[in-house]
Length: 332
Image 1: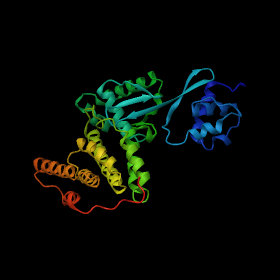
Image 2 (image 1 turned 180 degrees about the vertical axis):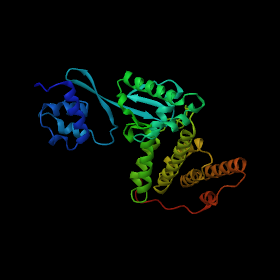
Image 3 (image 1 turned 135 degrees about the horizontal axis):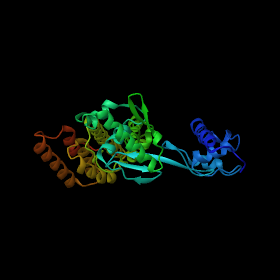
Image 4 (image 1 turned 90 degrees about the vertical axis):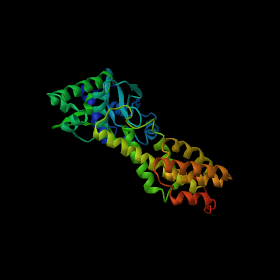
């Protein structure tokens, strides 16, 4: 390969390329060896002039979390590192696809708060309150020390510590929104709800993919403050909505076997969800299981009276005794 100048200049060209080109347009922007190196960094793979670059670019379609930057390995060689934060379950961080263990509740709490607002500044006083540092004599210095430790942790795992930036009196985690599973979940569910009437099959797929991101209760292992607690509750409510809409779409498409399996699974986690009981009862009746449908109704009614002191909604009663809709021409 021809001499392409200093390593610093190559890195600068790579950053410029990565921020000004997309995989679809990059094939028309190659101007010299500097851009070839930039392409190598941007796509995480060697780029050979005249080689299968177009095919490689096509394979990069879809959601690609923000790369935390090229890490120099040797002269002329770079490694693209991607950092992702997983919050739909115990806090989990992956760097270039490998799980990285972050210990210490304060560091984990800082990362969780910043990830929940990825790309947005979080004021220091908010972090101090969330981490309960206000009880210390010098809370600002304590927070600064924790931030410094978190940056060192990122650097030690080949992640770019520059993704954790200071913005005035705030801190910001410069990650792509979809590098955080909670945001990816929210966006997929919201999109599915928008198109559920016109594109039920696509909505069903999006909801299934969104629910598959969960690995347990959101932020389950964090002793969070008010912000983390509220966001975890919001995520749980949106998960309940996603489950309700998904089972309803399956009911409308007469995917009764699927409804029976998944509604039962969802009810194990959310036993007071009337819409799930309603979908389950309808699916059991249509599957010629009237006795099981009646037992499901009795189970739900007894649970509601014991836990809430009220009977089931009339819609659940109608699911047990009302007329059943005819099959649709095409299912999901």
